[in-house]
Length: 148
Image (cartoon, rainbow, N blue to C red; front, side):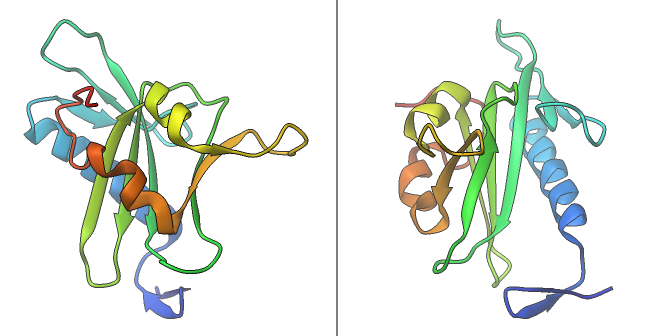
């Protein structure tokens, strides 16, 4: 199966890409010493559950994956009504590289843009072109550390 995306053919659907990125986040967390697993599809609010080995309880993680597009009208978004503790952003690059950013929900809420009060959506977002600069302090944070 080939799916056309951003002008090139890929061999997976958007759903398969999302599932794969959720599994990658869970695997990288586990390998960093934070056991994690992907929750069933359509689980409300989050995609991965992780259990840090410190005093924290289970941590709910919402995973957002996108194919990186430096130009155009591309965004990473999340619904403000979703309940999760951490946001994981996975960017897939055409050359096969992957970037992971894991940040606490309160930090994401504080640095993401929000549509005005008249907007029809309840989303927070970053333009794709600004993701790397905005989320750089949270790159590869598989230990789920609160960073400054």
